[in-house]
Length: 320
Image 1: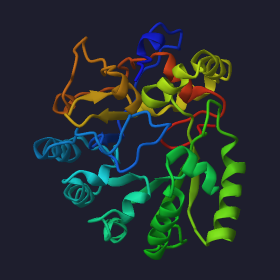
Image 2: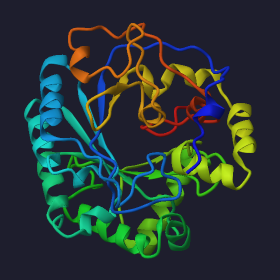
Image 3: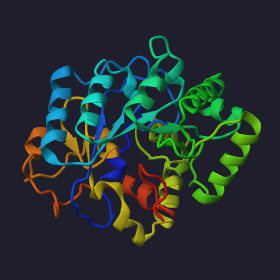
Image 4: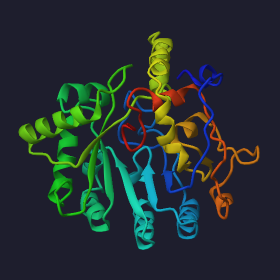
């Protein structure tokens, strides 16, 4: 796989600084039951990296002492980590809002048959990847049969009350383009998803979040191999909106890798761009306790244009 960091380091992206920390995003490991073309983590079934028990304990300690309000769990498939459920229970006991970034097919994996019930019982918000409401597009990006299994996962979540008004169980879907272009307007696409998934399959959800593909890891390597990298970067830079800088996720979020080291965001984690803390490298999560990160510079490179292009893109979807 071809690395894109050497092409991204020399950047003219605007300098930005952190605000108050509210969200801890934890990558529980790079193992996944899928291997998607767009994946910026390069996750897959053969990856071995997984957060060990002692690091999970550090995460729980940080939640209890830092006052952050949100825990955002990602991977790979975060549910494949042996300590996933323990972490969810402990976080919820502390009153922390938990988000599970779920690929939907994990809900029908052996040993995960009760996962939907567990998530509902803990009141976990589910952010579920579904790059299209058309079977051929999803299977083309994620593999044969993935769409059907994704629908099965959605129905399991709906059966628990996810996506229904009044239950408090939030189910948001995530769209990302299947190629090197920007997502369409989020509101219009959400209306399409609501109509098509409801009419065709009887599936319900709360919101659709649109994300731009990042020119890193597997997707970035694919762009290079197809000779599309420069054109995609030109697209991102040409669509940059200065107003989106005020709402990018890295201002209030810290990303933690499976070893317990911290980064400004999940994308920087994948590129090895450490959070800047007095010039140190590989800062462990525990070192952030008692520190006010407001005003700390954020490490940037050209991939950051993926978050500010057009309507903007973040873990919470479009920015504007």
